[in-house]
Length: 191
Picture 1 (cartoon, one colour):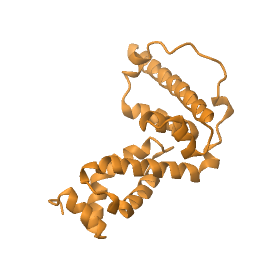
Picture 2 (spheres, rainbow, N blue to C red):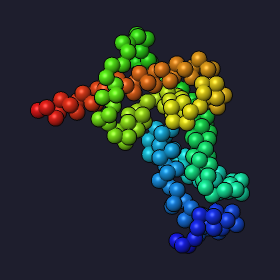
Picture 3 (tube, helix red, strand yellow):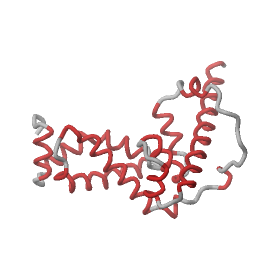
Picture 4 (cartoon, rainbow, N blue to C red):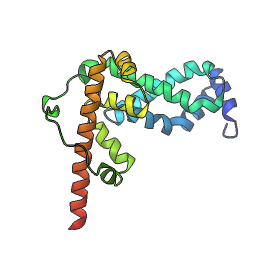
């Protein structure tokens, strides 16, 4: 099956051939997991979203007419699966600790580009996972997927103003966490 083209793999998946489904899963596992990881609290949640997403993808393979668009098609399925996962777990996700919400205004973020240039994508993703689920979800949909606040509000069942507030707070918490970690790393290297 290793010498099959993607078009052949998709056709065989659509026909229900398990070997083709396994090849499809293995080929796109890392990509799909990276999409889910941006929305998950931890690796376990990301894998659950991933598996649910692949089940949906296999059911919808008939809708995929052109194998050249498989990545955006699969990304959309994984993002929608993450949104569904969030909705199912909304009660747990809505518990945002009061000490995380700060009501003071901070100065504009100075030198953020220099600070964040020191960080890897994996490091940023680790910090993103530390955000409460509502903030992480809004941040990921807005920043990574390009959703508008209206679209986010419709998808997550909240007000547009709440979406904006969650994004603002997510940005503040991310910047604060990333800045403190780069400061700690800088102090460690100076010793």
